[in-house]
Amino acid sequence: MTSRLVDQLGAQSVAGATAAALAGRIRALILDGRLTVGERLPSERALAVELRRSRSTTTRVYDLLEGDGYVSRRQGGGTRVALPREYVSPREHEDDSAIDLSIASMDSTPGLYDATVRSLPRLAALRGTSGYSLRGMPELRDAVAQRFTERGVPTTAEEIIITSGALNALNLVLATIGRRGERAVVEQPTFPHALEAIRRYGYRLLPTPVDVDGWDTAHLSDLLLQSRPHVAYLIPDFHNPTGATLPDADRPLIAAMARNTGTQLIVDETTVELDIDRGWRPLPLAAFGPHVITVGSMSKIAWGGMRIGWIRAERSVISRLLAVRPSFELGTALLEQCIAIELLTEMPALTAHVRSRLAAGRAAVAEGLERIDGVRMPQTDGGLSAWVDLGAPVSTMLSLAAREHGLILPPGPRFTTGGVLERRLRIPITLPPARTDEAMERLRLAWTDVREGEVSQLDALPRAAVI
Image (cartoon, rainbow, N blue to C red; front, top):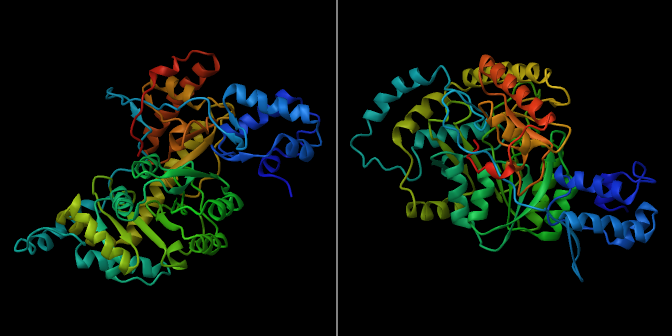
């Protein structure tokens, strides 16, 4: 049985390669996120046997990688993937003419105004109450539960809490079940602020690779089995940022593995309704056991300015969440809840609008990228963005160059546990086509700067929010 490293390298494709070439191939796998930080690599002797090379060659390979900071070696601890430096990310831009591609979100649905007007009598009827809504309005919890039931997971209002957005929901879950010092499996890449939240609660992150063609389910299964992490945070539908969807066949297997290892699955469904032309609707992971906690949101299908999210979990977990919530929040705004009740009665119209807008945005991005040599846009069936392949590890340099052209563009490493995926770039498909066309022209100019070596120093690129 070959190691994961050799599987990724391809023994035949590196036959006869020099030590420097082998080191370069392994470095590329690390920067691409296909080998994860902290992952243990085969010993020099084992690698030599697998590749049918001399021990001196594999020793030289690891020496080169260690010298550049891409592996660490400890006596008795083996050789593990590492990174030479921390990543950096784009600064906030104050120029009103800038196009901000750090935000992958559409403007409000056309039905928002009418839904707001219709919600006012419902809000007025609540004036005689305290106005606090710790669990959420019964009508809204019923509507959210009904949506889960329609998707194949029988749910009642008692299994739902309404929150102020999905990130708020994630923080409430972590505040309730979190265990400082425990391990947490996270996808790589993934939503940056989820990574920050999980770190804040003291978890040690274990990344598992995801790409446009999906999950490395063997790696994820091995990680669960060997590390027995306390939690795993997954985005199985229109994954942010790759757009991938976890296949139906893999869902019960991953859920069963998590259950057997005592891992609490936290499933983020913020992007679940963003279908363009996937052609099938998978069963939610919540269908496969009570150890699955699901968070969701209205922000991507209605408007980011309406901070409505939810948590679906078994009743014992809901009770624990409600006990913790008052320590930092006394409920969700009633006006937004009243509007959400109205909007959820119009889901066919909402999803049709989303599909149309995303299809137009996707077409505009694809057309713009055709003007940029060497950049490849993958198939994107839905979701917020295209996870673009730049063909070379230049994502941070491209972000720097883009800044000079009034384009705010987070590099690939911003979506990782640290410093990898420099070949990748998230480009939102959520802007109106005309705005996207202008953004792609600015990206083309920045790409030219990178190709000609006209880029600022890396230390000029501080951190920024990514949505």
